[in-house]
Image 1 (cartoon, rainbow, N blue to C red):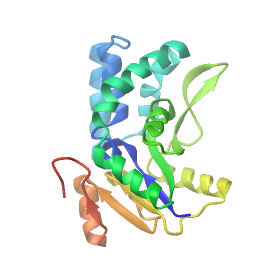
Image 2: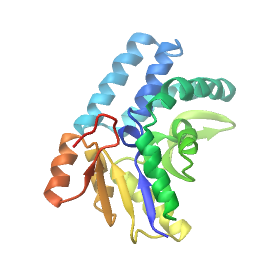
Image 3: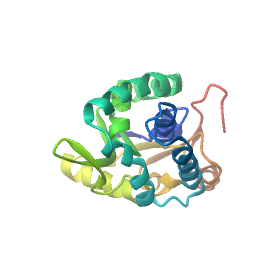
Image 4: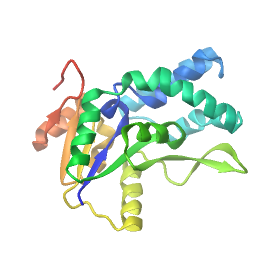
Length: 222
């Protein structure tokens, strides 16, 4: 059964769920407005520029999870999904996922964004398998730390390799869809890499290697 692997942010979504979660927290007054918005913007720019220090970012991004009890976090997350995520789920992305489901492929979402934010988004797409950055929990509360390896850049490759070893699946016939040059290490590993609305660095890399380039945005793309 071939794997159909999907990046999430700016691939299946017309936006970045991590960034949007930060915006939501600011708008609800859950975090300090000026400081959090400034840092959220800075980390977002660093990500696109390829200079993000993932550990520093995660200490920032996971702190709100540690500061509040789970019932409050879950209630806020439901509002966040409805207000911020549902509007940026791309109809063409849903169609792409359904195309692979109908073909009998095994569906896997892999994302650097933490699992608290992304697990319910995977459910919205009906994607049964998720590899995401895992926030650490102790005694029913988040600690603000990461459990294991963040699913970012080469970390995505390592996490996927561990998942393959655990589940007995392989990359034979696999496809991976992503928008970001940060995912080049994993795109290089699969049989069928596809650049989706790629950033300039990934577009250039994909063109050099003759990879397919496609758009899921209503306005079209490369």
